[in-house]
Length: 287
Ligand SMILES: Nc1nc2c(ncn2[C@@H]2O[C@H](COP(=O)(O)OP(=O)(O)OP(=O)(O)O)[C@@H](O)[C@H]2O)c(=O)[nH]1
Ligand SMILES: [Mg+2]
Ligand SMILES: [Zn+2]
Image (cartoon, rainbow, N blue to C red):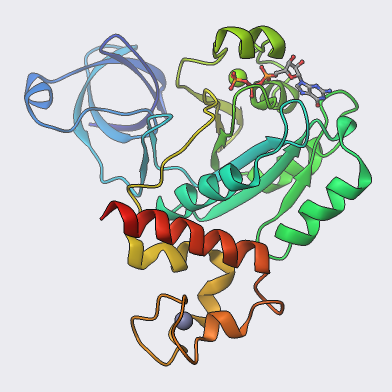
């Protein structure tokens, strides 16, 4: 039995990276009947049939799995937004961050792309809002800013690039991996037709032990899947203060002696607190 990792799947055939190179694998019949389907990112045990071919016998336990893009065992998410073209949407950015937090992704990075188009005030605003919570990298593929910084942050990890369509995710990946050439799109055409340039899910090897996953952008995100009593935990800067409220089930809304509200203007910004209440109300309305 040979251990490996699925890096790509095409029509029921899986490409598995192993110590013996890339193996093309099919799947045992029993898998097709069970609910588990092999997913890009999975660690698997394979039965070798030849130098290049095998059968996936077992899928090892996943530490996490994303729905879009469908990929498992992610170590790092680069949440990518451009300041303009398209304009940044902070509400959507927070939803992406919560999605990543709720998926147990240990490393979350905010990337502000197309920094060549951004002005200083906007850059300062984002830095103020987020740099105490997450690493924030400003990148431009036009003048090659921030690319080295990003490379250091994703070293030895499996990283997914997520964010709206047209912000330049594929362009960034092309800049990080000079030997890969992902299709990038003309943004105006894309918005007109609502078309996405990126479709296929694949682990791209950047260098030894470092993989990148591109993903198609999306422009709205529901957080229905988030359990409402965990939302506070997914606001990362709240975490240190959770458990200090007077009421153990404090929602940090109207309760007295709330340790979270106590931190507003100190370790928690008013903007993020307001976003928390807005999203919590959204979840409460749905249940
Ligand atoms: N000014 C500027 N434009 C950029 C930069 N990076 C990418 N672009 C342009 O932005 C457009 C969209 O880039 P893509 O890389 O296709 O965007 P994407 O996020 O992969 O889009 P989807 O695959 O649809 O999600 C292209 O026209 C790029 O040339 C940058 O750093 N600066
Ligand atoms: Mg793309
Ligand atoms: Zn509270």
